[in-house]
Image (spheres, helix red, strand yellow):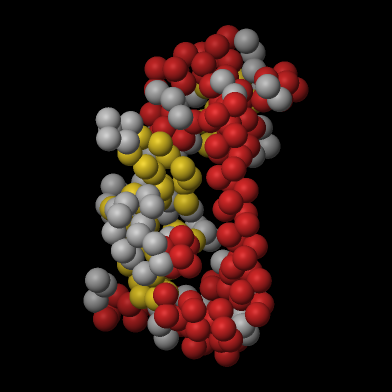
Length: 233
C-alpha cells in the first residue's frame, strides 16, 4: 500500500487529460472522471517486483502510467511463456475483474513503474452508468482477444524464423527497434515460444543475410522487403 502522502502527491499530478490517455476512459465526462479519481489508488513497483501471481484473486483493474511490465505463464517444468508486455497507457487484469476468475497469469515489473488501480465495484458502476465506457471496454477486450489469437497462430503454425521476422517488423519504428535493458534475447525468446540460443542463432542468420544489423541496444532493419517475405511464411 502507498502512503496517504504518496497517494496525494500522485493524485495532484494526474489530470483528466492523463486519464483520457487510457482508451477505456477517454469517453467519460469531466464529472465521471472526477468521481473516478476519488477511488484511484496508486502503487509504485520496483524492477522485478511481482504485481500479482497466477491463481490469486485480485479484483482491481490496473492502469500503467510509466514503466513496463510483463504477463507470463510458467509450466510445471519451469518453461516461461511471455504473453504480452504492458506499457504506459495500457491496462492489466481485465479477465479477473470482468469474469470473477482468479488471475490467469503472473505479472512482473520489468523496470520501475507507476500504476494505479480502480476497484471492481467502481468499474461495474461505470459499466452501468456509462454506455460509452461499456463500448470502450468491449473494444478493448476484442483487441486483447485478437492479440491472443494472433499469438496462438504464430506459436502453432509458424517456425521461429517467421515468428522472429514478424516480431522485428511489428516492434520496429521507422526500421529501428530500440531495446531497453530488460528486452534481452531471453525475453524475446520467451515471447516467441522458444529459447535464447535459438533466437541468437536466428538473429545472426538474419544479420549475415543482410536483413538486419544487431547492436547492443537496438536492431536496425536493413532489407525490409526480404524480411517481409520471410514474415509471410
